[in-house]
Length: 523
Image: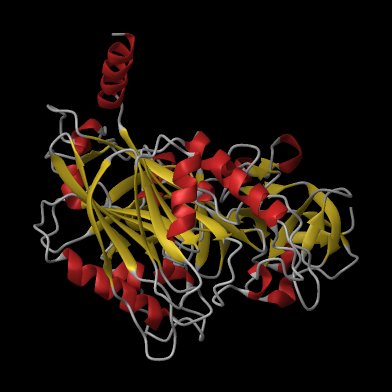
């Protein structure tokens, strides 16, 4: 009787909870059998010390992460073989179901651990003549008589051009159009593509071999006409579009990996419009998160699996986790749920502060009495009283510093984390504001590393210049950036910032220098 009661309570608990679905690239979980397909540093008991001790540490560390994350379904990447996914399952008995796929001669594959019943699994083949990567794992689940699919992805890395990832996206999209448009599915995994890849890869000759087209954005239709699909329009598009959950969190918090201390989002959860249509499975808006407890992320560093930087062969140190952080989101199948989009308050946009909450504008908005507090060529920064500042990164040539305007804002964008006005019209030039420099912020009285001060003009900041960094003391520095590098102060100069544009770039704060008059040498 006691066991029956526990079983009943467990059943009620599962049904009362939302479904948590997660993704985690575990960074190369290999076993100790020599299959001749291992990476050099994972040859069992070789010179790199991939041995029983280090294997046990790696396995136990991953078990801890997965256990603490406690997702109902977790998609895993970089698992060597089926035996390892079964070993994880053995160490995580809450997961009664699993699926796994890899190509016979590839080093690693993809797996799923699940507390929810798996109906079936299959692979979507993506093959190339001269290179071998991984298939896409399609897994179908049944929960409370509701069927849905999770597509686990691990696309080629950026060692190759975007055309390889285009093929993955095309294979995936071709499969998706075979499903009914109201069928619930989730695209998940390591896409090796940022959520805003169409913005970030264009200047790379190596990556951009597709004339500006990306798999994650234009093929999977997470963007339309280079604007993100958002809550505002996902149900209005006739074509099959998708919403990338990275848009649910602040721009400076969008990262699951770090490269050269810059934020990157190779891991993605991308959902169909069906998850907003109030049928069966529904996404719970704003439930997307990065899982980063202190033992995984500390002092702006991901605690990855540690290896020595030996010149010829990396050696395992036996500590750390992965170079990726897990990501997760929650979904509901509770009967009677309202359309999740109706649960989101539609805020009227009337301030610059409101613009920072949006990824794009569906229709123009109007800002009254905004003051140009900084102007250089066709760029300007505007601000309102008791409001934030924002950057007009071009087309501002006709504006005048120290003058207030009424503006029609047609479009905005996040450029590598910095909010900008992309398109605007001057409705009316109003009046001269003689004290406009009162809008500048004294750097000594604010935390310049707080992202809420993006696009503000700061003054009274002093420090020593070393390698395009302004050192405020021995341990603290902020990057100095100028499109024209000739504007930057020289190494060894002590400078005072007079009118610095405080900005962010891929999760790091910087000061943009637009003019030599923005700083002076000396106190």
